[in-house]
Image (cartoon, rainbow, N blue to C red):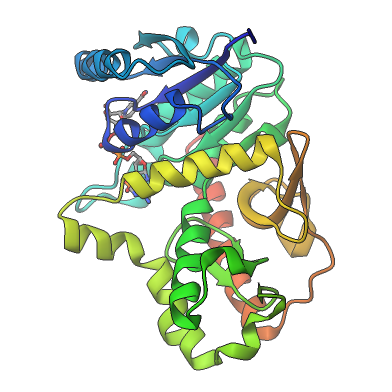
Length: 327
Ligand code: NDP
């Protein structure tokens, strides 16, 4: 039998955690041949709820689940972690300024970065889901100086999947018929879902939609989907966010399909004019557990303007966490 992979999940007692843990334990994160050991991190008040979820995990009798441990100390939770899913975060509440939000999240992601630095496994891969995800990832990454920066990523796969779903509905095709869609920038309302390099059954997607639909329907629908779900469901999206987190890590570990790519927020190397170091979403291909930015795409004016706006927002967030002394 293979040695279990240690998967640390923070915010394990939350809504996303509840949907995520069962899919990890069933083998959907790493594949049907890989046993997993779950290490759950929660704040002390939520440890009891996490214990309840652990009881349910036991009751599901997943053959691949080789154990569940629960912690309220990040140093312990990240010890030996091969994969870390950072879901727990401080949500923005009414009247909260951006500085307060970043400060509160600094208090979470700074010690978590330090704990990953201190004790995670050499092959650690980190996905930040908790918002503001890109900047939280930057805080953790900066506080883990001995871990290669590229191991810190943030999730734009839900935006990517939402864009696939919207485009497939518009064109009356299956999601699997659409390739090479990209989310650029920040996981926020400024994100830019780009169809200009996308292909539908091998033909350019942009030929089948007009710019007015892109600007007035597609982009705002994808960017505001989270709010639409809250309005309908009375609660944030959780299962779809968990599903996208599974997709993100599965693709990172197992590779993108030939002739396709995915979207991941990763530390920029300066490609496409995105300042190096910002954790911004790019088109990436993955292979053998590593990713590379897809190079050489031409960006039209429509795309350039929107990418620049989202990247400018990321730069402002980075400047704010610098002035707060978080990085
Ligand atoms: P959720 O599980 O619903 O959400 C967790 C985080 O994911 C939030 O920051 C949320 O951001 C973010 N998120 C990213 N994408 C999405 C999406 N598409 N839809 C919804 N959320 C998204 O939050 P809960 O409040 O249910 O649970 C959070 C848990 O985290 C609690 O149990 C809490 O105790 C725990 N926690 C743990 C910490 C730790 O382990 N150290 C630290 C802080 C909290 P947004 O709010 O912007 O939607």
